[in-house]
Length: 209
Image 1 (tube, rainbow, N blue to C red):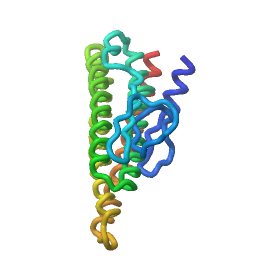
Image 2 (image 1 turned 180 degrees about the horizontal axis):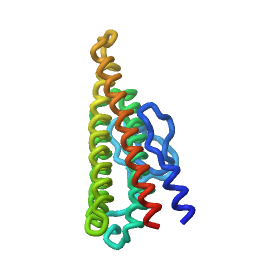
Image 3 (image 1 turned 90 degrees about the vertical axis):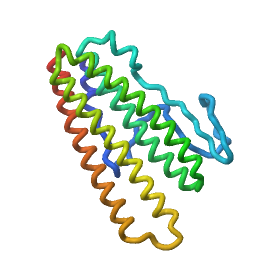
């Protein structure tokens, strides 16, 4: 449909320094006494882990999808969910640094990684669904998943380096700053590569309509 195509074309993976975000319920790390409704927040000390994330598409739903639906769901749901979780990861890191609480960050990252793992399972199910009739598309989808796994690993590595810089009693040494800059550059390269692969999948999705 025209609306589906519009959504697919509007999806763009953010660069490491991109300030845009996906507006949807996700995972948040914050101090207590927040207003509004939350889904059973888990509190500890002076911080609260609020997990309001729900994937747009479940793994179980994939088995009933035709190939065009699989591609549309991957592009407009799984990929969008990943964007939202990366934004949440960055926001949570900033809060954890402010709180100076390693346990808060560890709990937050464990929650985020669990959701990324669930999305990866859904993406694998989508690839399997495409494999029999559209093997090249399944291969493209698998390629995006590998890039996504690398991006998450690199993003977490970069946060550890930035945490070491922020906690340094004296000015951080040039090696740490250079490492942080290198990781940021690699993240930008990965984001660009993911965007390129997603663009190719979007083109294929139009051909399947």
